[in-house]
Image (cartoon, rainbow, N blue to C red):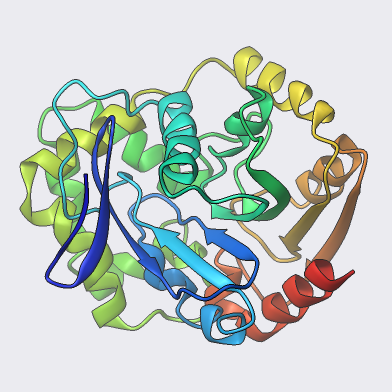
Length: 284
């Protein structure tokens, strides 16, 4: 059943209720995905440059910043969330979608599973790839905290402090430029205040399969023959620079764009450059 809560569109999927934003319109559909403990506001500087000409849809995935807890026992593993993205596209009947990833790379599993029939184009923007799950110190910190009783509660409490948010080696390596406190407050509040959200986050954070499995999944993506754009941050601290060209070489129809003066969150650091790259790709 579809509906809204406080004016926010939502849709009920097998794992639970997913909230999303939708700019509407008759143009081609772009679906923007966000990362761990981040929500769709990470795209707030990009969507205005695309909306109107394109229909932009932004789900809030159960990655720690969602406000609606998932059902107890829902499959929130890496593979489970990838398939949930496919279910979201199907339930909204979205076709020939341009699927845009940033930070979280899990939706690539949808491609490796051969379940990306609704995806017409794929954009991989400075995201997890190959065996880089979870990425860097921030990702490993969440994964470690999820295995310790009370660990995620302590982690989220620490993220109330601006010094923790901008600390080198932590979330400070996500973006070169400070993200407004009110935006980060929105990202961290759900897992900070709701134990059911922390339960969902822990279910995902504990689910990373062995590296051999991750690499096998990546290898299977070679079968995806539709256009792919790989946008990589030249100064990224979390996603290895060599993963950009390596991803582009994986697909039969791919192009690589490197963007300077940015860390992982290119939508935060260089939104205008990302909009230009997206527009060029979509009109090619």
